[in-house]
Amino acid sequence: MFDFGNLGNGMASSAFFFDDIQQVVGLPAPSLLSLPVNFKSGIVSSDFLDFSGAVGSVILNPYMTGINTSSKVG
Image 1 (cartoon, one colour):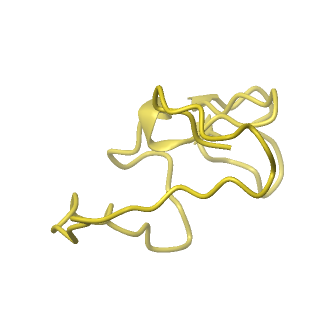
Image 2 (image 1 turned 180 degrees about the horizontal axis):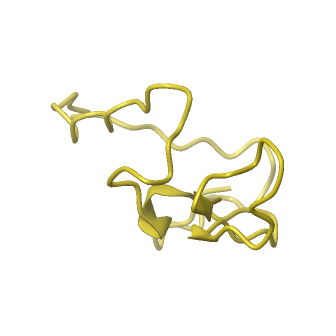
């Protein structure tokens, strides 16, 4: 339940009314990545979002063998 310093009657049936709501232009949407992602381009670690305890980053490829010959991986 919203508070904002107004106690209401404290019951679940309390109602809060809103007025003077405005719709404004927000921030521009982020640019979309084109696939496949090439980590040798200008992509940096800040282009990834960390969530649920996982951390995304770009590192040097520790296993450059076979078909996996890229210098950086993410």
